[in-house]
Image (cartoon, rainbow, N blue to C red; front, side, top):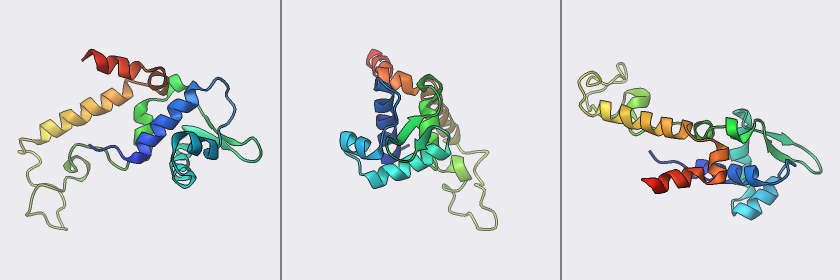
Amino acid sequence: MLISTRSRYALRILARMVTRSNSEPLSLAALSEKELVSVRYLEQIFGKLRRAGIVRGKRGPGGGYTLVRPPEEISLFDVVCSLEAEFLPASCLADNRECSPSQSEEDPGCPLENSCVTRPLWIRLRNIYYDFLRGYSLADLAAGRVAQEGEKT
């Protein structure tokens, strides 16, 4: 369950956008400078975030990006899910193809799906992970509430 740099950078940058005192658009150049991420990479990230309805862009002088919804309404899951093709503990949860050496192209399903002893483990890990990310918003991340919760355990 690796989170790509796209998601790590996006969460960090979106949290920065939340903590700003004004709601003026932030340019990718300014974000690049503050977060040490190339503008080119930010263009890719923000393109996906825009398509997911998380940010909106404004062109021209004074342009940049703003959040579409209040940060309390954007879950960390929303952000990560918009940037990750799959973030599952095992690929068999995505396409049922991984464990069995006897798979064929005609029958891509895993013949062990109903009897695999590890499948429930991967499903439970996925659900814990998804629930955790759904349980926090960008506002929580920006305010440090995720770190405070983590310190209690």
